[in-house]
Amino acid sequence: MKVAIIPARGGSKRIPGKNIKLFAGKPVIAWSIEAARQSELFDRIIVSTDSEEIAAVAREYGAETPFMRPAQLADDFTPTADVILHVLDWLGEHGAMADHACCLYATAPFVQPGFLWQGFDILRQSGAASVFTVTSYPASIYRALKIEEDGHLAMVWPKYELTRSQDLPGSYHDAGQFYWLDARRFSAGKKIYSYDARPVILPRYLVQDIDTPEDWLMAEAMYAALLAQGRLNAGERKQEIR
Image 1 (spheres, rainbow, N blue to C red):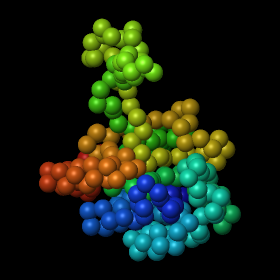
Image 2: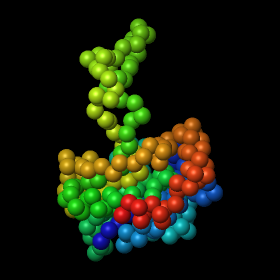
Image 3: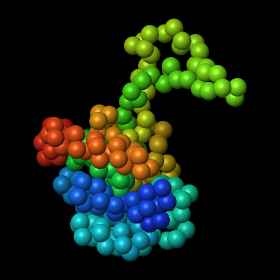
Image 4: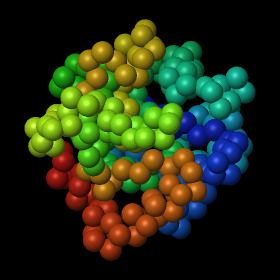
């Protein structure tokens, strides 16, 4: 069984009501639910939440909310891994053990069904325990600067000062969209970033972390631009990537 798990607790402080705040005309969580449904990959799409309001919105858009997340797993410090493990344990206790799980964040309005397929294909073909989205840094991290205590600038890695940027290795960061997991290996090791993790590399124009009001404004501007350019057709992208 393949299950999509969407963590969406209530009580966001920096963006109140973040998980159901309207984004381009519908609750932001709806974009993740709809991408999961459109992919036709999943046997179940479960939203893990402690909020009745979020649960109602999730059900409206086609997800399940078969339980309310316990309070001890819904504070500001609960790791995502613990939330995933709770869902997998709940499924196992109810006779529905998952083979593969995809943790899909609720605030990922640019997620595309085709990339969900790409991640699943990599997971199956590689035999890795986890696969997740990354994107490249716009500039080499090896030319990074820091501000010292006395206020002057210094290179983090001075040995690369004279190295041409094209000769430096590329670097990537977590794109914060989804994480495919071999459910049994994850339940045993409890690590999203497994030692053999593989990437799904996303173009930077489809990546925007949404943690602050400024991030939200940036994401809305990106969405409007991508929509105008016709780059958000999930059906075409699914065919292209698969």
